[in-house]
Amino acid sequence: MACDKNKSISGFSKLTKQEKVDWVARHFFDAPEKVREELSGFWHGDIQLQKTIDGFSENTISNFVMPFGVAPNFLINDNTYCVPMVIEESSVVAAASSAAKFWMTRGGFTAEILGTVKMGQLHFTWNGDVSKLKNSLEGIEALLRENTTHITANMRKRGGGILGIELLDFTNQEPGLYQFKVSFETCDSMGANFINSILEEFGRTLNSYLATAEGFEDHEREATIIMAILSNYTPDCIVRAKVECPIENLGNFPRGITAEVFAEKFRMAVRIAQIDPFRATTHNKGIFNGIDAVVLATANDFRAIEANGHTYASRDGQYRSLSHCSIDNGTFKFWLDIPLTVGTVGGLTHLHPIAKRSLELLGNPSAKELMGIIAAVGLAQNFGALKSLVTTGIQEGHMKMHLQNMLNHLEASNKEMEATINYFSDKVPSFSAVRKYLECLRAGNEQPEPALIFEKK
Ligand code: MEV
Image (cartoon, rainbow, N blue to C red; front, side, top):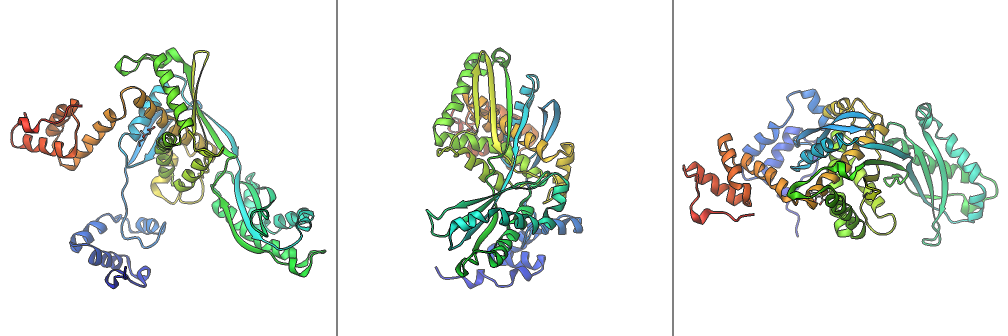
């Protein structure tokens, strides 16, 4: 397809924000004036704050608004939290809140940090005698550490820094390919910039070592640095969130389902997600509904968290559930092991005004505490979804929220909302059905004509 000159531009980034909006509005919309007004309508009134927000990205033309909600009543390690959540999907915050309340009276959540080790990699190629490289490891490592002391100084004061450096040999898969696999402790920061700066310095240092070290031939004096970058897979930076109670304390469930039947169906639902990747994907998506919402609210990197979790879920070669359930001697246990790399200092955590408030709302937690909170919300979300799935089905709750959204969209009054919710309590509320019903109401007809009687659930 030919490039449309009308829709392409060079030097876009150099335009002022207003010029960017004008150009986009003029070239891509039928009603540019309206679009211009709408986009600039979302600019923040506080110019300084808007500048800060624009600085988070590039080519910004407006702000994209997402709901900021809270899920109260989270009892985690005997502390009560009101958890901030940013998410656009209805039912997620409601399900998290309801699961939090359910477990609050059953001992709450426990969260245990199983490790906090972050990872980074220096990938390089080198054509030489590998035994020389292996024999020089001690000297290379000493120099790598020495040449990065200026970067690690502050982190070491806080108890972190470089933990270990390992040489990996991939020459059986690709001639000349090696890697330094480096482990780090980054304390309360997510550590991406810290790790990447160290790894880039490692690349330079490796070559300065090879250039002067004894015993290397001329062709062995230089490695080709392919890339230096953290790994988002951190199987040793991991948290376990857990709930448990005697089965009889689970109580009774809708549709006359007893605690015993519920526990067994629930256990089986988790088991299915361990056996079948198609179900595991949806199951874990439900966990990430909760996790991503807190990660976003605290301005952490949800793409890193997602990538990490999904790799961990496939660690034995098959994609499986991140959560587990067992029934032992009448005790129902449900837990989630998940790698989470989050920060409570650095990045946008304190630059984004709402993220800063989110952290304050959580009592300014350490990174470890935040890992526990996020994992507990993921577990609560998973509990809420499975509880609905194995009892009433998911649609009952979803449709209620969906109906509410449709009514807001159709600008229904409170009275119209009440009548419509009541009317659809035993029917499927498709968008067209809801619109037609509202039209009937607005025409003064509360009982739709037979042609408008909608499908029963
Ligand atoms: C929907 O966003 C998430 C669920 O599909 C999760 C699940 O099926 O476990 C309800």
